Amino acid sequence: MNIKRMKKVEASVLQLDGVHSIGIIGDPGCEGLGTYNMKVYAGALEETADDDITLIAGDLVPAGTKHFYKVIAEITEALAGNDVYALRGNHDTGAYTEYFGLKNYALLLEKFAVIVLDNAVRSFEEEGLALLEKVLAMEQVRQAVLVFHIPVPNHFILNCVSEEEFARLKAAYTPWKDKVKYLVCGHVHSRFVDEVDGIPLICTGGGGAMIEDVSKEIRSSDVEHHVVHFYEENGVLSYRIADLSEDGYARERGDGILRQRLQETVQGELMAHLKYLMFADRARRRGMERIANLFRALAASEYCHARNFYAVLERPAAFREAVEGYVPGERFEHEKLYPMLAAYAREHHYPLAQQAYESASAAEKEHAALLEQASDMEAFAKEVIYVCPVCGYVMAGTSAPERCPVCGGPNHQYERYDSNTSR
Image (cartoon, rainbow, N blue to C red; front, side, top):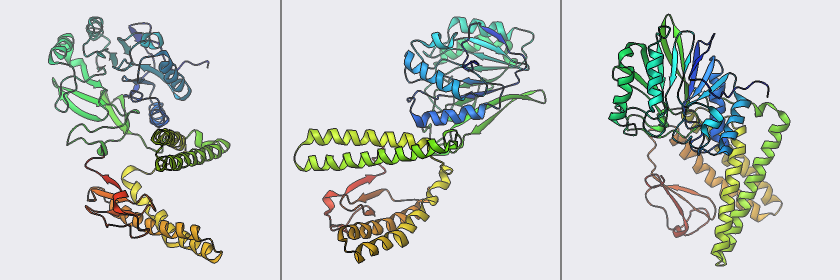
């Protein structure tokens, strides 16, 4: 690659002429560089490509080995639409400087400065604070964004640096506090906007890691993956938080040959998942628990493969609109497709296929009913759901019949799904 998008910072102060905006991505890789996480990151890079530059606010990788840094650097290089700078997070240990250079530095843009400070070990480095003082003292710097990984003390979370560390940071910027327009951090896999020391604090951790609950007020279900854009508008340094569509990144889907191969691969991996689970059942029934355990593990691995390949292909609806989108498929199966196939099997004297379609049709009918209720997510009240492992029939409620109404399987075999214990 001739153009090096992933920048290695080798000077503590960089003057970037012609740069007017920056997009900030938080925490793309701390939970692993799996395909789903990287699809979110790819969408984040697409979103920030409209800015002049991009900054990753820490936790590029799950652990600071050369292998992981090489992977994230290569993915970034392949997908980025502008120059990308990095900030060290608590997961970014080891060989970080070998790949991304200095841990404390300042980017002097056309209308504002972005000052990157390392606090990955929950303390600000002396050289970073000295740099902060130096840059804020510059006459040309009139507006600044301070970016670090771990939050300073705030009103939402306790997972932050100590008050003493924040006092050190304040001591460094206080003589020029009027220039400090925003504090930005990552680390928390969510987002919130607060005010500390009279300065807006923007916490953004939505660039790839799974979104987590912050508090009763900030739940994972209410926060999307996202990026933050900073730019000057009418002489004022402003920001905008942009949610990422789960259907955003689509490069691979545009290649017809690859799309077909991915679909075939998903089918193959799911078939392997099913075959291994069924063999695990056979082994368990024969008392060979170690063999059964092996094949359950292999089945789980094949499912993860299928999920990763499908993540490249998937075009999901917005989360709160997705549930009702599954209802028509379930209705079609139990109202038309499965009865039709059961009738064909009956007419041609294939009793096992007939029985399988008829029992599945009964289950799909219950699926549709439950999904219709779940379309109103907040009102959905079914806490306990049972699945008959013999035929797959689904029963919701605090109790279940002694025997499955479809196949007659005993209730001691039911698989119990309890929303109060599933986490």
